[in-house]
Image (cartoon, rainbow over all chains, first blue to last red; front, side):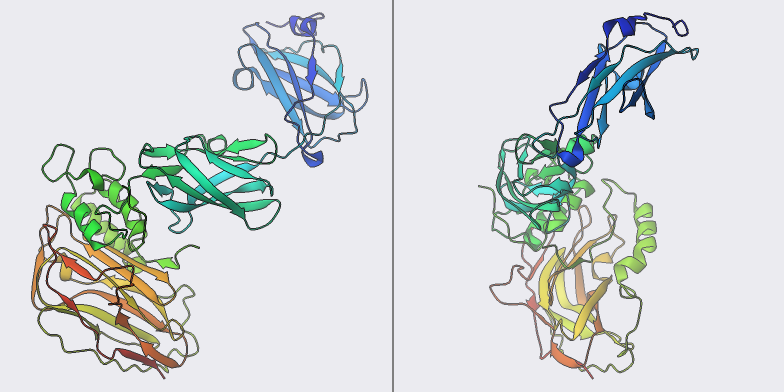
Length: 287
Length: 206
């Protein structure tokens, strides 16, 4: 239990470290990260950061940091955004236990945010531009629409799986675009399944789709080529192959591995969902 | 550039779906699948000034042709009719229409592939791949077998809405440059003898 207004509390004794974060971005995205060692007291529930623009005057809205959710086993931190890069900010910490007791404030620390060299993009989605589906078929170069914000003119895109190559990136406008068109090709050897992609603005400011959507529900999914007979067209013959094999499982007489679009060993509606959007298209067949 | 409009069923297929659930789903989706009203829901100023003339060829045995169905105000509905063809399992073709005179307004599934109460509902993919071009694919699924037509039965009804006075040809694209090969296949992957036949096929709005 934290003694109310206890002086010289462990947290304060370790001091408060202010870090002008290396990821501080542009003048409009100025960020200051405050971090400190996490206390080992078991009943500690949260910290409160009191801050302001003058020493001893902490009139800006206090910020809470929950120990369980916002701290690592050894460190707690909080970032402040949209700050004035010409301004010095002053901080003190208090800690609050399960009973609501609040410690004495820590010694004051101060810091000035630093303007970084680039703006991090935000990636919110990606899909095949023509079919408006998340499926990236093996072997064929496809135009992938990447949506988000903060895409700058010197932006680049790559996939975490390096077997997916990116030939070109274009955007509708030179700065702050919300859509990028990416010519991407999944190789024949690219593994099936969800693939994360990364957008990088000039410098090292990058973001991945999974950062925005940890469930990867909006990610690109690599599937087999729908051109089963490898004639360069996705047509009735390919549809016929899937329909004949429909309902079969791996090892079964009618199982056709080419038609198992997601490679799960069963040819069913999941495969049809991945196949149908490409009907009628010309594609590069897999070798 | 995205496809103009994909009239394929508007929901994703579940991996497994009981027949009863499929039937219910189809009933619920019927308005979306069949096209119904256009996106605006308005009839437009030419709503009741439409007349059509359509010179479809005779429906000879072994052919796939267009046939006018019913043409209420402002609409042109065409059946794609199969005559005397056996062992139909999968169908694919594309067609062109005068996109300056008509807009494509969806489709309604016909009885051809639904014969014999298939355990898996046939799947229809109807996509306007570019202005004035529609790609159609449909298939039954194993273990349901092929179907045959002794007389005439239609695969689906294509629905068009008049845009302005004019005329043009609605026809299967039988050229070698078409991205879609006009084909009928059986349940063993064999091509079924079937001829896609165009007549004059002139559709008019006046």
